Image 1 (cartoon, rainbow, N blue to C red):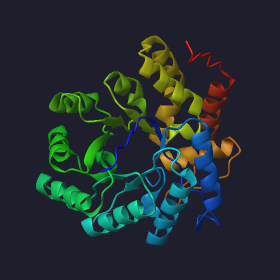
Image 2: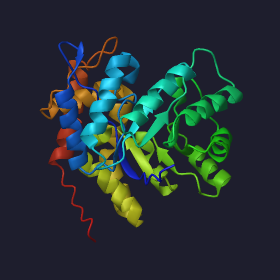
Image 3: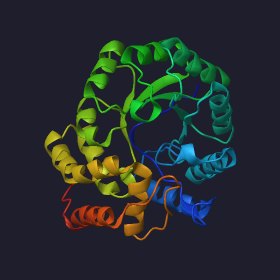
Image 4: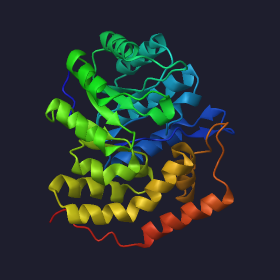
Length: 305
């Protein structure tokens, strides 16, 4: 299996729509990914919840995966998100992602019926057997309905060759501490809960999976750089400047709030696909106020210190 040096800011692009949400706007998708890379993203993770993967047809999903991977063009790693009810469909998408050049896949197990740990383990094992690229375990019970214990995650990393890392999105810092304890710090973990970014880096997170990079890239990258240097004072200062936005986009829903924010920044990414609705006028004003304060404020950082 190829070694994947995944670190830093792993940015989620939205999936832009046109024609009233009926078709994928691939030109804008390419532009958004280019902007994420130019603004310092260390990896691109299309087709997560921010990318509205649950609302795409099979053909649309494959189109977004293909366009995203080819736009990135190996300049940074691409990690394609996969969240499917059946193991069969998850394998099919994982194989497609590998075929078109993804560097890794991020697998979120979802279910109608609650899955046992044995079933979850077999789900990941079957996907891993079908592909040769690394798999990131994605734990997000708020969206998937399944909570993966640190003990189960550690066992999968130990016993399934392709399973090599985990994105932890419960918002519970103790999960990261426990993963560290169970593996003696050998399991790379990535923060998926925006308001937990500061604590996660302090706990040893290898990176931050975030949609905020679409709107405030200078802030997200600065937090990572200061954390990497061990400058807790500056990391804390930068984090608290961006915290109001991190809370807002989490509460309002990532596709909805990020698309509204892009619109405020003059980038037409369309609206979220129904049944999701755009922000109402009051919420747009709130978001505009937050972004205006961040834009007018002086970041006053020097990463060369």
